[in-house]
Image (cartoon, protein in one colour):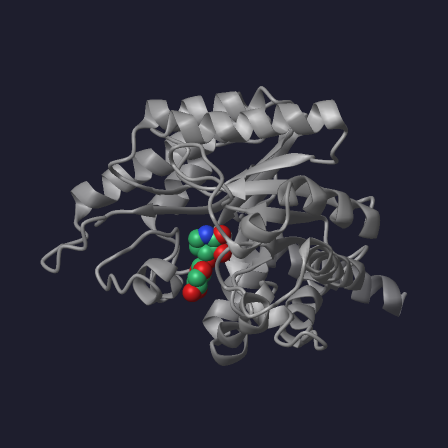
Length: 348
Ligand code: XIL
């Protein structure tokens, strides 16, 4: 009898609790039919409770902003440092978030010892293979997909010169093969930026995919970084998405941010007009993603959480930039709310 009373009281309490709209929080991720991610910085997770709270509640996918890149994860020829990457993986696992790996091979944020590496083609291949396979094996079963190779093509469609391109013939294909050997279940992406308005770059990527299919090179997805601005052309962006999706590969908008002050005007004011322009760009990007066939939708990842954390402020030193869905205090911006109202699950 007593336990029935307790049970009923519990029900009543729960009912009353649910009547308060503040307690029934619906997140943007809940109305989307695909994962919503953010790139995350472990230092901010440790130092800033608001950041930690938002990162853990608003997203169901996580990318390491910097800590799985060569310079951090492989600081010396004979030493890997998985500490921060592991911390991010634990954070994600505790919250049922997917982890996306970024990035195995890139021309930037390369370890100094790699730049100084001396050896013949075979030695270079062994070095890169060992890097890829040690990292992928370490995270096997914990990381759903990897950006295997990042930003290999220039705007004119030629291969970007880099230590990898200079020393390892066919390094992109080889990287995919090595990653696949280490974790056959991982979804393997080629990731790049700025294909919109750069038809030669776009074509180079499509040619690579076609060539890989012919040679049975295990590529599963294309990452479109989507570092765009309010001035980016919707049509050009939509065309890139259409062409990329036509490959049949999975599509990840992997590093989305929408700059409102791309020329870094020091007098810039983030007023209602700027906010509206940004909102329509965000809507257009999310709608373009919804046009991708459902089976190919890997997700949308924004490049960090709040405006104050954006690389446009830190790396590019553009203090008057507001590119994300949360403000400096991690309050959802109006774009967030309108996106939530406009995008419903499985709606086309
Ligand atoms: C950026 C990070 O956001 C910065 O913190 C870092 O200083 C430089 O790299 N394309 C990519 C990302 O693939 O890895 C880059 O991230 C942004 C551009």
